[in-house]
Amino acid sequence: MSAELISILVLVVVFVIATTRSINMGALAFAAAFAVGELAADLDADGIFAGFPGDLFVVLVGVTYLFAIARANGTTDWLVHASIRLVRGRIALIPWVMFVITGALTAIGAVSPAAVAIVAPIALSFAAQYGISPLLMGAMVVHGAQGGGFSPISIYGSIVNGIVEREKLPGNELALFLASLVVNLLIAGIVFVLFGGLKLGGRDTGDGQRGTGDEQKEAGSRLDPAKIATLAALVALVVAVLGFDLDAGLSAITLAVILSAFWPDSSRKAVGEIAWPTVLLICGVLTYVGVLEEMGTIDWAGEGVSDIGVPLLAALLLCYIGAIISAFASSVGIMGALIPLAVPFLAQGEIGAVGMIAALAVSATVVDVSPFSTNGALVLAAAPDVDRERFFRQLMVYGGIVVAVVPAAVWFVLVVPGFG
Image (cartoon, rainbow, N blue to C red; front, side, top):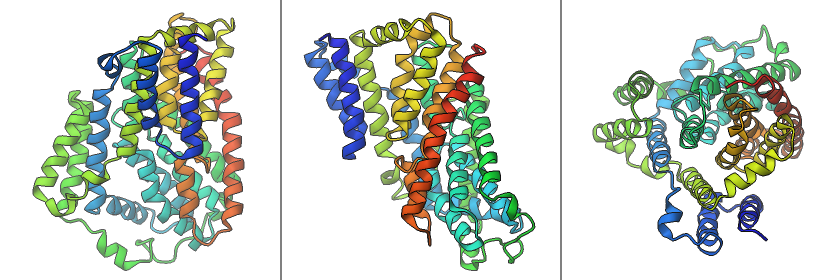
């Protein structure tokens, strides 16, 4: 058995173990990088660590550190309740408010599960209180998170754009962002119509502009100096990255440190709330991918996909592979592995790189509504007063439909025309 095939089989084993044993995929990938690098590729420690993504490590730590401070001092709660007040309690708009909130949170740097964890309990409580389908509300939250998830300063966007730059592929940050936003917005609109959203028209919460009916939450979500400064920091991050092309990770850490210096009490626990599992996941998977590149597995696998002989068919298969595995495992891990594997395939020039990367990214993340994924599990756990087994089956069926339909749709729209 060739060393390249062994390394691919080890990667499959990593995904299987991470899915079935609830072990962080990044930790498994570090162990696999050590074993494969030493035993199959004859690499020393320096060769193994050559693939460690130091730039993405800083981005992940920086943006989740800043967002943890925003959560600790109540800024995220203020954003949620302010958004509810804007719709003046109209029930039909609440699912869309939740879509926009989660999309905005991920777009400015929140990890997708973190945004869902914040918004889902509030959204599902509204659903239970006002007779909104929990599947409708849960899907709106998850698709909102994924809709904003590929902005240039987001976690997903930074990861994919970083991989694209690292692999010297043609990239388009705006096209990636808009592809995910439009796909998830269209899905949200279909879900809204099919699961009773139109029937909510004309109803309201009955408590005027507050919308929440909870005066204690209203009082707790008022602006104070810490929240104002945090909102200013989030705006400053956007301006720094988009306006001045500064590094997102370093900018976020700098802003987080400034906030911590002025409000140490509310920021004390923020370091512990950095998304360390996600950091470990990404760094581990990309380090293993670096080992694959060092030993020539990437080129070997890409040539194997190319040998199918029909580039469009190969592209479709890659999209489905990403969607199916991601429904049970890490979306970020799948993107980190699939995009480098597609590099030799894309280098032939028969498939547009921009469209293919966008299709892979969307296919690997839009399925996160599955109850086996982190976001789907958060929605399931957050739903009050529901038959949990029935709701689980609903999420599973809905996730299966998304897996079956969306990869083919994005392939047809983004890959077949040859964008990029």
